[in-house]
Length: 169
Image 1 (cartoon, rainbow, N blue to C red):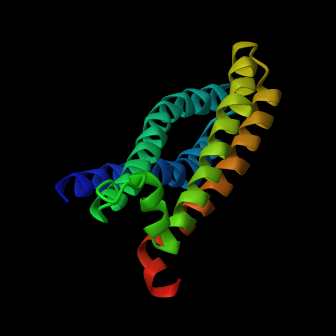
Image 2: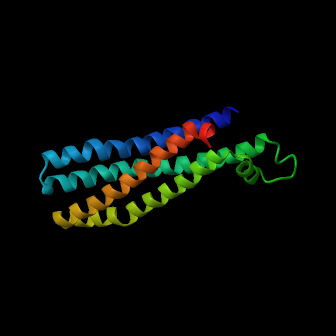
Image 3: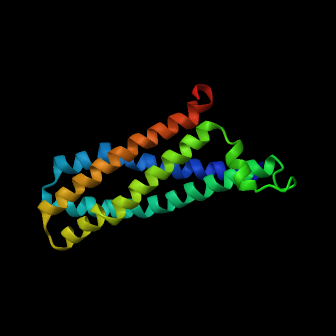
């Protein structure tokens, strides 16, 4: 049970870093940068901020995924799956509440969106900054902003499912 509690702590910490960081970027950092900085200052500043943030998000995503999968395994182990000759991971998935399945599916969608952000518009943003093409960079920042807004909304839904799921599902 102590291991499960530690995994849950890591899981929640990863979510806080990821979702809280998206909130901060979307509602505080970006609007302030737009208000105070011209594109030649704003675009590289936001690109550098995102580069640092995405480094932490990558770690957080891996921690959230690994801890979530291990918690499925722990549910199966606690139910005595291995003693009964069953796969503990699959048994954990079978026994998990529907809210846990909802969190898992939404989390996978969020991870896919994050991977797309990193591999497509953010990569193009970095190239635009290197070329000092502020108009193109601003366009890529808008793509990142839209995808982050979608992920932020999904993250809030996951938090709602995590906290209210057993009561409403």
